[in-house]
Amino acid sequence: MKIVVIGTGYVGLVTGACLAEIGHEVTCTDNDARKIETLESGGLPIFEPGLEKIIPRMRKEGRLKFCSNPADAIAFGDAIFICVGTPPLPSGEADLSAIDHVARLVATEAKSPKLVVEKSTVPARTGQELKRALAVYARKTNVTFHVASNPEFLREGTAVGDFLHPDRIVVGVEDQTAEKQLRDIYGPVLERKFSCPVHSPACPDEPLPAWVVTSINSAELIKHASNSFLAMKISYANMVADLAEKLDADIEEVVRAMGLDPRIGPAFLSAGLGFGGFCFPKDLQAFVHLAERSGVDFALLKEVEKINKRRIDRFFEKIRGALWVVRGKQLGVLGLAFKPNTDDIRFAPAIELVKRLVAEGARVRAYDPAAMEKARPELAEVEYAKSAYDAAENAEALLIATEWKEFRDLDWNKIRESMARPLIVDGRNLLSPQQMKALGFEYLSFGRPS
Ligand code: UGA
Image 1 (cartoon, rainbow, N blue to C red):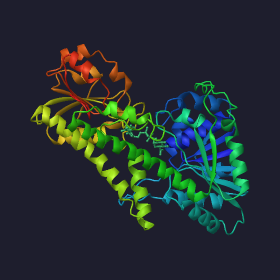
Image 2: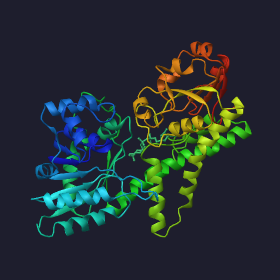
Image 3: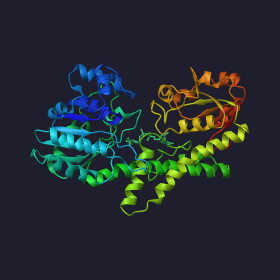
Image 4: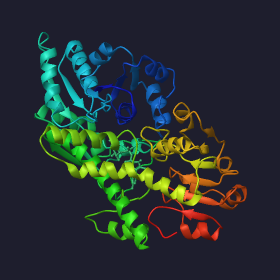
């Protein structure tokens, strides 16, 4: 099929590249002309493993194009995926102006019927507004539109694999034509009839994805409800970790056993500095707002957010408890990204932590395998290390803020020798307390006996 993707951020770029990979002809457009220029010249505006291989290959095969003229892009496609940003307004509510802008664009430029697929994360009932807006803006052209909601469940860092091997594909539709078109688009994924040389094939016993057809309102709600539920699991685990600490229990033992119950599941129960990124914090706020506007007091989620904000305080208490005075101390920080395998620092707990350390007068030398370039403008007062070893040198404490795998595999003997004081405060429970103690470290983490 001929598909247009509007918006080339994380979601749009992964969606466009993977739709091309499974056999469609895709044109991506964006109102940021610089982004399109970068993509046209072979560059990538984001770091997402796999894209660096898929995008050039798809361009070479002529299945993926980038275009700065939205009118040309819209004319090209039968289906239009809206992947524009819905950032938070100061109130926490989602800013939907980009969706409205795209609706106007599509309605005025389309010359033939289009399937308009809302992929951006939006509050429930946005699809209804989108339908109405398309009809209003297109009232002189008489072009018909089918609207669908197709929320994405991609995780940064594994987005390509998540797209090609999803556990479910949710389509919110109000007519059979829209469902049929979406089924055609996702056919190769549903039947796993594609081979992607740059992404490992699914293991043979992996179940095929579920095809979940719902109303548009439900599909939108599924997205917010899923992200908020996962955020809730994290905050829950963090509270249990605090309690475990007081009771001399071990959070790792507790969540391992909890997760064995299939009704609970093991994922998203890792205690630590809490969640960040451009999805959970903003989606949670937008969901609470949506509930409020609908007359439902979702106090549970307000608490989830509060617990998460307090994680940095808890971490700080640990640092202060160990160092006594923070001012003037040389500290190493490992990790700046909001999670491993990404260079994304948006709403990263690590960034907030470093800001606080600097405000308290600490001297910070930070290292992250991917996120230092993005962190520089945000954290100007920080020294950037060449390696994790460099960050640890002469430090009076080494703080782990993002659980990159390579940090686990460091030569910890070498690190201990180079530090002014062999103190580790592990904000992600990345290392083993027993091993660190055996190696001669003072070691603090979340919810585990020290
Ligand atoms: C999240 C969801 O997992 C995706 O399904 C969804 O599509 C995406 O948001 C989105 O809405 O676009 P992502 O933000 O990439 O994906 O990151 P996650 O892997 O979910 O992690 C979110 C945060 O939670 C990270 O800061 C991570 O460190 C933290 N986390 C995760 C914990 O603190 N504990 C855990 O047990 C798991």
